[in-house]
Length: 455
Image (cartoon, rainbow, N blue to C red; front, side, top):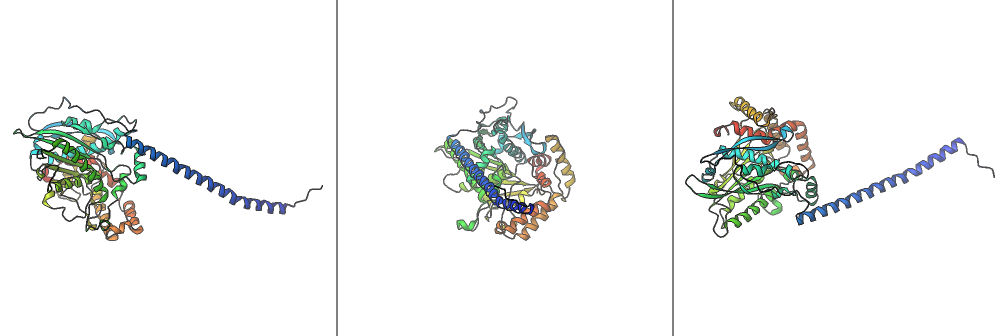
């Protein structure tokens, strides 16, 4: 039977029809494959999350806590202050280990906590940096030392606990926290020490050093909460408050174990932290202060100390300047954008006293800045990376945001978020501005200054 002849034009027309008819089928197959891949990935991720949550429940699958530290023989416990060399990591060196000398004196904790103590504040600035460095120890295979345990051992502390880092330092745990909405947390260290005054009095000092923002916790920094939801006129920043409440619960358990029914008159508390850690320490200290007005305080008001650094604004409560919180000191860099957020124009503030480091344009700034840069290089081994002139761009950014977003509700809008992103991306050099936020910068300033050089 003769084959049907097909002209070139007919063949081209049929080919186009076949191709045109095949495209939708191929497109559907591709979409189906993608859908199957997404479903499989979702199922696999859900299974992974479930396994990790079960491991947490059982206390498995995490880097174990370091062995109990011993007090180093090189530390001489003479009367009066002693010095120790503390190691930590610095972002300015790519997280390499650096070190600096700190001063310690047990007598500090028999003095009035409402009087600013520059030596204690400087030591707290270092311990706040150590809190950030501790994270590396709790990452499998890192080989990083236990910075916090080593530091506190040199200062004579015992019963050091960094257990909260265990499921809050690995990337997997950060993903899990993000997916299950458990990012309103923070990692912290708690340690105890028996301190003795020059006249022989004794107290049990509980030190709390809180880590700054890490992984999924950055999202918690944006969780300011809504007072209207709780039928309140004002409230503390919800993301920080949840973390601070966990910390206070931990302290309550420790104090109850130590004090029993004997009361807490011989308990002293020291809070410190940088950035998110500063906000958490500030709130936790304010809660401890509040508890002194009740039947079961954690410690007497005259034995609660708090020094924070690069502290964000953290509450819309109107009583932040109440004398009850005079034992809280917040050290801030004018060139650092973090202490300016959330905006004061929205009604946000910090508990206690704000102490500002010297800023660009202040009288006598240049000489002080040179001293701070020299101290930074001595500690870290590289030139100080922050530019104090960023104070001007930070001031301008804050003013622009306050004008474009008159209330914190505006931040939740598409336009408000766009304004924030645009401001951070175009109005300031965010990478450079963040150099003024480094813990190492704050440490260098504190070591270069006298107590009367903060404003």
